Image (cartoon, rainbow, N blue to C red; front, side, top):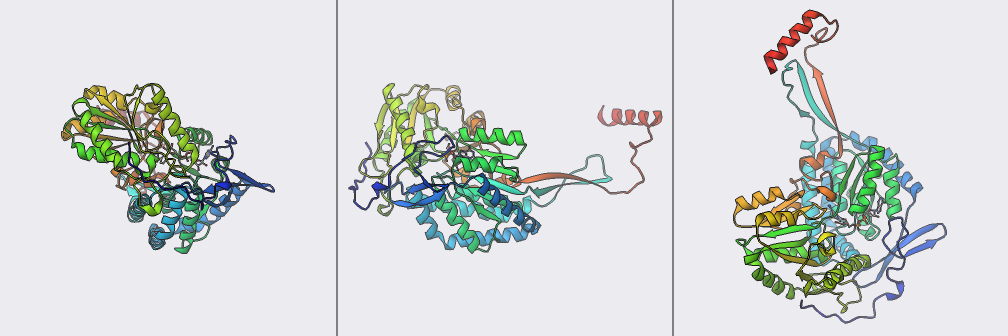
Length: 529
Ligand code: NAD
């Protein structure tokens, strides 16, 4: 059982503001309390760790979305005309301003997510590293790129990376800064303007971001933030005034967005859910693997798309690994921000309900809950204890569906073939982890696991290496962000061929003749036969 700090309930909390008041309206909002004022609807934002009321935010409708798209369109001309260097300079100023205003950002992230301060700081660190990469590499990757012309020495060839127009960025609540800033900066670097629709669960970080962007001197209308729920996001996707969508969120929503973009032939990047496998062979450094599992499974209360979720441990190492993880979990403390805990609260009630459902299904079907397995009732807010589950059957919900909470599952395996099958046994394919001192085996197994991203003897680090493209396969998404692949994904790629000689005509142009046909027959035989 995890040792947890006990904080008595206090009277400062605003329980009266109501928790999780409304059921879903079928428009994609997530059970937050909705307030109607005249014709306008607002959602109420509470501090998830203390239930303090943080504000009401408008649910903007399709007309409002169209209005900001028009503003972003009008800013597109001047922004896209800036040189790559000038855009990179703006992004650099934006990053520097973000660092100057770091304490404000930490406050907003901690209060709206219930994160620990360290988790917020790690998020800012990651954002800054990504921003620096985009400023530095953007001008290189987006400059015209010469291509070879093969046989045609009389031609020149290059690829131009052209801005698409207005990019709609739709982001989730679990990392409200990095998952907004990342696509936003890549889209801006490529010369697009942006309308950002943050999650209704975490609107405040994106609003703060827009404020910081303006303070940094980013031209007005280049970046817009519009608050709302799924209906607002859907309006952004469906409007013919948005030219591309970069969506990060659940697979269910991603599928809907993908369908609409497919119908409209609108370019789309889909960064979706995960159910990461971690394979631990018996020759691995077990202490490091256990520490990696604890941090990778429980930081941010496990609300991470790449969270360490299904851990497969080779039989000989199983008992020792479980005992190391159990011992580590017992030393973790949950708490409010000021207590410098290891784990904060979860971000909103619906997510706790999903975790409770998965754990209770596993328990009912005979799994063992080695620690945790329930809400931490020492707090008024949304805390769930770090939970370790063993003795599974692979049909359990907890082994197949995205849990997205502080829960790790540990399962023994015998052979390499068996574990590859287990690792691939879900619909997801985002991150994966393989641990072994035998690097030949680790790399061999890595190639057999169907995942967009892989870490060997490590957790999460692929995400901080900005030169690596990030994205999922299978039901975890389409497309990449970061790396050369991601930076270029926000552009139309125009392939350009240039004639160098200026002859009156090419050999294969009119007129045709028997002689010309025979000449080409012989050329084909000579070159390719
Ligand atoms: P979600 O799909 O419920 O919502 C994401 C965003 O989409 C929100 O802004 C929401 O308002 C909006 N939305 C909802 N319905 C919409 C619709 N019909 N059309 C357009 N927009 C709509 O996801 P969530 O609960 O906010 O986020 C958690 C999920 O995100 C998890 O599945 C997690 O794995 C995934 N995620 C993926 C990555 C990644 O990079 N692959 C990163 C973080 C989170």
